[in-house]
Amino acid sequence: MVPGAFNALLARMIERAGFQALYVSGAAVSAGMGIPDIGLLTLSEVAEESRRMTAAVSIPAIVDVDTGFGEAVNVERTVRTLEAAGAAAIQIEDQRLPKRCGHLSGKELVSCDEMAAKVRTAVAARRDPDFVIIARTDARGVNGFDDAVIRAKAYRVAGADAVFPEAMESADEFKRFRQAVDGPLVANMTEFGKSPLVPFDELAAIGYSLVLFPVT
Image (cartoon, rainbow, N blue to C red):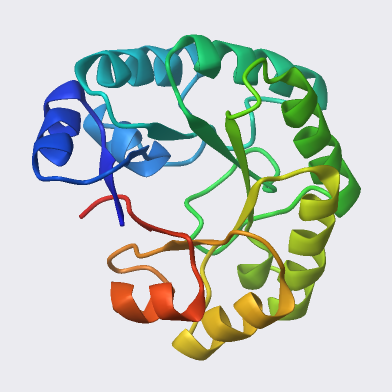
């Protein structure tokens, strides 16, 4: 269970409450800056907020880096910058700019091959072998469930340590995705999103390794 944080004070509250990790959510950081979650954050802004949070706590931080702040060639710098900011993991998604919150309509995706190239770049760029690369696919809300599964498998082959299927539309879809895709999976419980609020214990029993609560 990983709560979302958007500043160092909230990060400390999460740690003191006994959680083992925190999530630097793009939606939460955007909201904290008074801007919509449509890809307006820059790498330097995300890195600076992440640096403040990781300096304030000892638990690991998973940082949402949206689309990686550019093409595959930009992802190398994104990984190095977030490693230097103290992040333990990043989450990168397969949307095309301008991106939107994963639970909004009107999204467009890059090709599976483009995203796989970003994943390979991220894996090659990390200096710490324990730095975790999470690949998020937004395909469920664009092309459907089957394409989300195809993309997840491709991203795992490209080297992603975990896969994050965004905006599953039922508890059964979370279960079917777990059955179809090997390796660690991440679930996202966002209030007022397209996914139902599946109880944490149920997601854990299905086999999800991390459950994010980005704006709770």
